[in-house]
Amino acid sequence: MAADFFSAMRVSATGLDAQMKRMNTVNSNIANAETVGYKRKDTEFTATPDRESFGDILANKLDENVQGVLVTDVKEDTKPQRLVYKPDDANANEEGYVEMPNVNPVKEMADMISAQRSYESNISAMTAVTQMANKALELGR
Image (cartoon, rainbow, N blue to C red; front, top):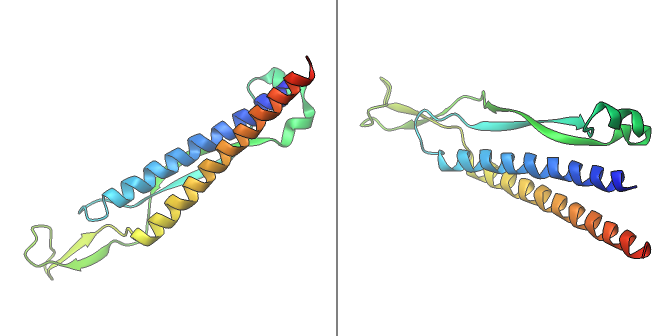
């Protein structure tokens, strides 16, 4: 049963880590929204089985569907940059346009709120697991 508590904590910990990396990526996008040459970035997630060792796999078949999350990559957005008319800028092309990052502040803030809520949900799950473990210890006294 202790393994179940640890498994739940490990899964929530992977969620915390992934959402923190997502928030850092969004922060970078917002900070560089007006930086010439910057390319907007997105985080990519993948599910991963919650296993610490081969022994864990053999010992507990019931947890085979328990999965955490990993950030597998931070990729540059492939959408075209936005063109801004600035004929006096040193980075302007022949027509006077400068390629600026395709960062949409509204979308970035929505992503930030989503990541923050996911992060908070993982903290709540960890708190609940800790409380359950404490109650289980009290019952054993």
